[in-house]
Length: 145
Image 1: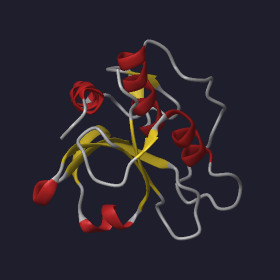
Image 2: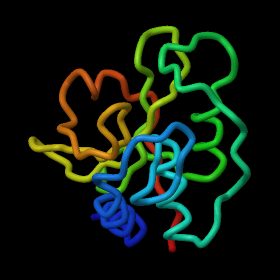
Image 3: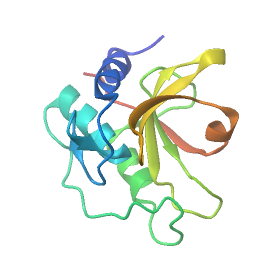
Image 4: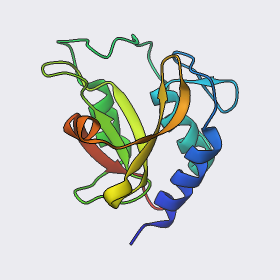
C-alpha cells in the first residue's frame, strides 16, 4: 500500500513534467536537474529545502570522492526495500562511478515508470526498463506528511 507522502510525491512529480533541464535548477516550469526535481518535490511537500545545496558537477560518470547523493538521501529520506509509488530512486550510471542521478517511481509492476530530469530532455516520464533497474544504487521514501 502506498503512503500519503508517496502518492503526493508522484502527483507533484507529474506536475514537473515538461520543466526544462537546467543544471542545479529547482523551479517547476523554469528549470531543474534530477536533484532539483527531488528538492522541488520536497519543498512542495514540506515547505522548505532540508539543507543548502553545495555546488556539484553534472558528470554522471564521476569517480572517487564521496557519495553525496546517497548520503543526503540517507539523512532525510527513509530507506525502502520494496517498490512503492513515490519512492526516490538513486542511480549509479556506471560501475565505479558515484551515484548521481535520481528519479521518482511513478508506477510499479510490469509497466513500471519513473519521473526524472534528463539533460537535453527536461523532466520526463520514462519506463523503468531493465537497464535503468540495473543502475539502482538506493531506494528511499519521503517521510510521513
